[in-house]
Length: 114
Image 1 (cartoon, rainbow, N blue to C red):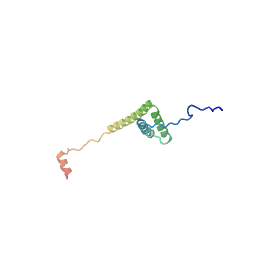
Image 2 (cartoon, rainbow, N blue to C red):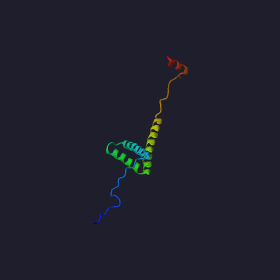
Image 3 (cartoon, one colour):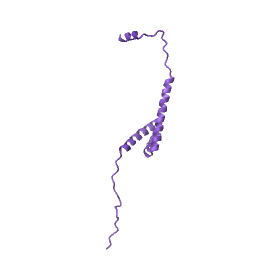
Image 4 (cartoon, one colour):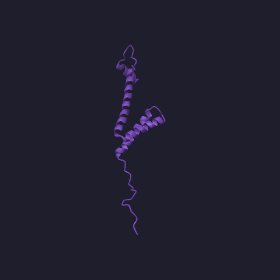
């Protein structure tokens, strides 16, 4: 009798999944933070914000250049908003002190102790 044909290697190989490196874990955390911020800053809640966040996370995790672009654009937007807020506060002028007589420092200190 002839022996049946036997394969040289097993048809299915089982390998243990690779452990995620510390850098990959940090990238996931960073991508999640940026994605949630992008989703929150879209101004729309629900599906649109969710899709924006998912897209940002996908780009960040998949492409290193995409991570730089998305994160850079997000940070540039935040800096622009902060600058606008500072300029707005600077434009508001405080009311001038129209009191007739200045208060001497010694008198102010005595009044404070009482």
